[in-house]
Amino acid sequence: MSILVLNAGSSSLKFAVYSFQAGRENLTLMGIAEPVGMAEATLTYTNKHGEKQHEALAAPTHAAAAQRLLDLVEHEGVTIRASAHRVVHGGRSFIKPVMVNDEVILVLQGLNELAPLHNPPALACLQAVRKRLPSVSAVVHFDTGFHAGMPPVAYRYALPESLCLQGAVRRYGFHGISYQWALNVLNEEVGKSPAYNRIVLCHLGAGSSMCAVVNGSSVDTTMGFTPQAGLVMATRSGDVDPGLLLHLINSQGYSASSLEQLLSRQSGMLALSDGLSGDVRVLDSSAAAGSNAAQLALDLFAYSVRKTIGGYAAAMGGLDAVLFTGGIGQNSSAMRARIVKGLEFLGIALDDSTNTNPPHAKIFKISTGVSAVHLWVVAANEELQMARDTQDLIKNPG
Image (tube, rainbow, N blue to C red; front, side):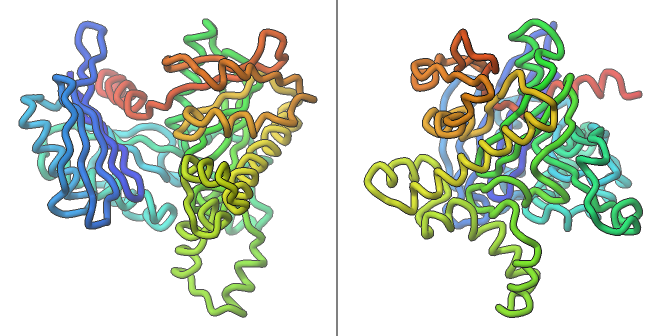
């Protein structure tokens, strides 16, 4: 069985083709289209022979990228049995992967406003694949599903009941597919499930969030009704005083659309660095060269993560492990060190050598042998998690 996986972001489309045969998983095609929406959009992929290819996209849209990807799949001679699609926001309607039909498409269209940067691109890719491969099963996977069981104290907003319980206004949380993958890898490594009773998961990247997990289940998370809330991010502000937003509307002439642009694309580490960059790698270099603004961006990002670890330890009544994943979490040893510095009172002891020179592995530990709290790093692989879940759903559709 070959499964095509599409992971659409606001300005990218990651994809992979996995084949499942006789209990073995094989990655036959993988790549990314970026920056989608820009004239310089490029498709980069690695074929089944391990050859890396680059080409410009004729049209810089998610639908066009999906169509070109389907051309590549056909050229590689791969017969797709099913497609898997990441959808950021499932609202109240979806808490687990579902097979796609026309009714599901209609519900998804109604959810676009809840994640305007992410859901529409995913839907565009889904519709492109369904049009090209109408007889192939399609499965949608939701980042919100992992958090569906959070208790009311974690998901309820202090707003009128008519909004919260009837209007579906609540903290949903995101990055659930990534969290599920990281937990599964950790459980396999430690040899038991759950690996730890109380763990903080940190998905740190251009979009960042954290999750408190007790006995394998999400009990709190930083993102909320939308992926805008919580930590400082690359270009997203994270939490801001709602009164400030009212001030911007009433006194500065901001509209809903201009606020969305401000909070999602013009804020975060990009704004803190005076417009330099939201990329930690660029900020690290600039800070080393003496940029105070770049240093502030790095420090504020680390601070927002550090104080959340402490808050979640209090909420869970203790802490057994912290796990880092995502582009920053798994690749920036300097950021990991910044984050845990000052958390020694929780029993955290970082192994500087392993953290700075990590092994090439999908999971590794960066805490010392005497650390009361274990520190782990897991390479993200949402695509494989979705492929596995799709295979399970097709085999057991009930």
